[in-house]
Image 1 (tube, rainbow, N blue to C red):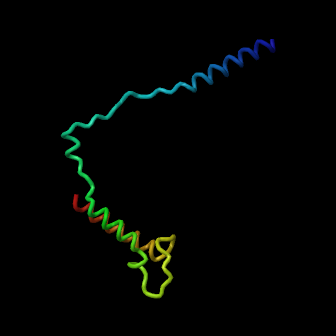
Image 2 (cartoon, rainbow, N blue to C red):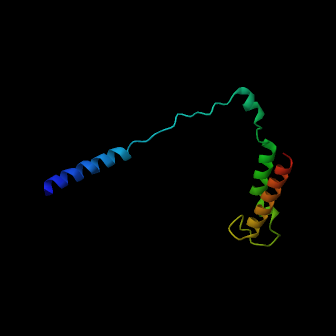
Length: 97
């Protein structure tokens, strides 16, 4: 009786392992036509460049002379300046849509 239970349990565990290994992958592909791709707007490279330059120069823009310049570290003036600057840029980009 114990051997029969053990065989059933072994078969059950083997089936469970095999069934959980099967992965169903949907065959759904997004095809973008040339017309649709032209409608999608490319990001403005000049805006990206100006934002990157401004965030790179936080120690010059956020701190006064003689202050310890900690960059954009957590809780510093540089972080607050960067957060406010990014907020203003994102709001201006969203209002220009």
